[in-house]
Length: 264
Image (tube, rainbow, N blue to C red; front, side, top):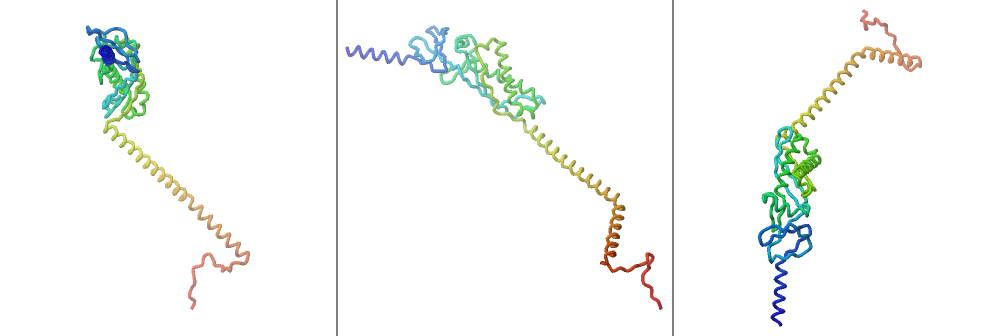
């Protein structure tokens, strides 16, 4: 009896070890003993035996792809020094079996026992879309149009999926341009241009100040005669007022006075 119980327990443990559990966010596909894909997807949460055949697991949500150090060409035929982008896509769980069995294996990638369906395919689509979107902007305009570029990449990829009748199986959920950097020559030229513009404004201001100063001096020169006569009249009036008030001792000198003459 003990031997039977031990045998049953061992068989149960062996059966448990020969099972695969589908995690949340994944879908499984069974491969039978004949190496054929069975069409029904295995949903997360259950344990599935692998005594006969095997179970392949496929993440279907929030699959991230990063493209780094790209150098797309801008509208002014300048290659960016750096362009980094991350996208996230999702797979319709009911399309897993079809995608794996009908699409080229080169479209997929594998990591740590999981198969990432269509990841290589999506990488190619996003890369091509990035180059196309960037081409619509000049190098110095591109950083200010990051959001537009992200939207254009999303549209281009989505349209491509529709044209290949994959829009019900794949969906691009996030597009994030992490870095945009024009090449060094473009940045140097832009810096030199800004410096020149600032210097020009300084020179223009200096010229305007000099012009106004010249106008002021010309006005003073033109009015100098009138100003002197006015000042003389004011002085004569003040003297007359002082004499009338008895506050000034005066000596009357003829207008044709030539100075003192020695009389012998």
